[in-house]
Image (cartoon, rainbow, N blue to C red):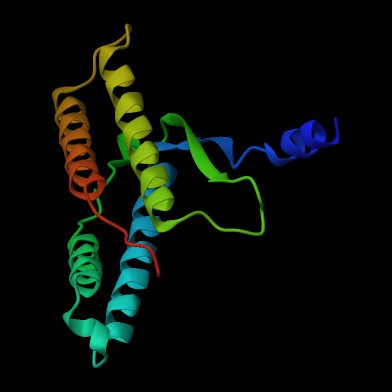
Length: 163
């Protein structure tokens, strides 16, 4: 019986999921801000490996390539006519609040934010009611394409472990 209690107490959740509601403008801005923060972290990590024995390793190359890819992202411009759509997205975080999410999890959270923004744009496009103007429709399609391009670029990035 004692063993069963110990086993049951060890099976705690390892992640928690928080749900947020915001506007497309804020959600997209936050996602790109978080991606730029990841780029800076990866660039700092690569810089710290330069001049050491790690500079010629596969890990250095991966870290450097990831930093370059994140640095090269161009933030999508959200037209004012599309900036106030409501977006609901979920973020995955460690259950233990003392630990921060991994870099890969932070990237995945950004992808989720951008994906939910695309879905909000598509819902507006497909909504019944007064049709969108040709200009708004073009802006919507261009923004959705820019966001999807960013998602495609960051989804395949590798974030190696520290050790």
